[in-house]
Length: 233
Image (cartoon, rainbow, N blue to C red):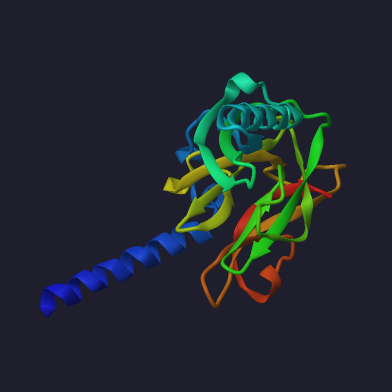
């Protein structure tokens, strides 16, 4: 029993250490002298397409729909890679089929304005902040301010990351050792003079250790994990 007990103790300690590390944003955890210059991570957005008809026609239609969606999101279709499909999702009564494809578009899409809104979304097992799209199956909870679509003075990129199915935001391009999802935009590292801003906090829910962002200094009654930066009011 002793080896098993020691193993479970080490596992519990590792999980506790990971949780503690994720509560504290990377920008707050590292002293300025320890930071290194890193590249800016890309925007990565999933793009899906659906087509119907004879199989070959359905595939062509699905791909065309996906590429139209990529262009609508500001991407050059050449920057999109097929990650799933073609997959038959429905057999139609006339013998035709419905086919689905999914692409991942990566790079720097064209954005029509200098800023866009960072919204918070929630479902039972996850809360995520997203400036690009409304995640499937999530409910909109409200805005968290706006982000720049470009690198303005005194700003840093904000990234969407994931760990064990839990999404969180970070100013670390390496997602603090976790899974990279996408770049969300740029926020101020310190409160600028003459610009309306709100502080963006990292928080942790007491009941399930779920990470989420808030613009309330008390983390809505949950665990306070530090300041990520300042979004535009």
